Length: 332
Ligand code: KG4
Ligand code: ZN
Image 1 (cartoon, rainbow, N blue to C red):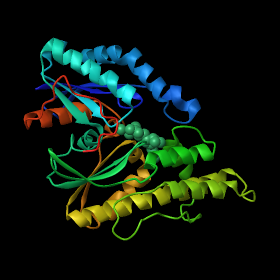
Image 2 (image 1 turned 180 degrees about the horizontal axis):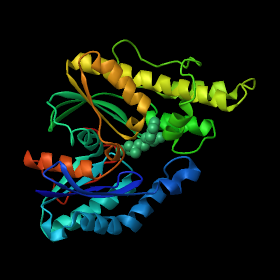
Image 3 (image 1 turned 45 degrees about the vertical axis):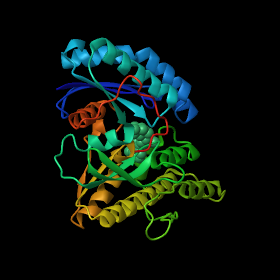
Image 4 (image 1 turned 90 degrees about the vertical axis):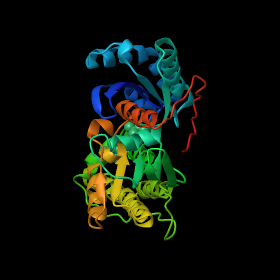
């Protein structure tokens, strides 16, 4: 079954063709990241206009690369939430138009569930598992019983993990997006130098909080006695990164032990961070819990994960109709 996936929830205009849920024939992504850099974060109106300008071009490229025609498509799968309302509307409108004109079924996809499916595309693993989505907009833990049963175990009470990295880089005047820059600076630094506090929110909580860490960094940097040498910036970046990583690994472990699962899947842009990958493996594998990461092009927003999950849901009887509405605050 050939599935066309469409993703426009934030700043990536993405279209992909996937066969039978796993075989990626094309995975085209046009990002508007460069247009947001000077603002230090995604500007919704700019992201939406970029989708309008590029979506037809990205669709044509995806078809071309996959060497298929519109008439070969069996199913359309599109993200309808959570995300930016205007941005989501572009993808959903295209999906509906194609579904109607080609007379093929349509499936609406939850963006966060798609991020976790990305970790399943190249790995076969057994349900149930615990999943973590860590991106610029979300930090959410799920218990996944099967493709139709997703339960939220906890999420951030304030900033998302990626957002915290972005804000930290802004405070340090390092640029945007902050995650990759902080990781690079952290490489030469000492991660135990500055003791930034970790918010564990009690012994059993599966929620996250990153705003205190960001504020701690802000106050540390404001201290006029601190000299902003390269060495100091490296230590700040490494210590900040380690605090964020510790909070993520602790909650991941708690969730896996609480649900007694042996598999953990993680997705979203922050999982590009090598220290986070290493720490999750270290913490979970020593308890006999297997850790699954998506391949790097599937960590960030893309439409292959959307097409893949669409196939799995459609096979289990899920189908949307042309009344599908965008849901910017969609949970599960
Ligand atoms: O999933 P994504 O591409 O977009 C959404 O937010 O949905 O994630 C982008 C986020 C940004 O906040 C970025 O700073 C963060 O992922 N990120 C990283 C790294 N690469 C990207 N954070 C930490 N370390 C990285 N290497
Ligand atoms: Zn995302």
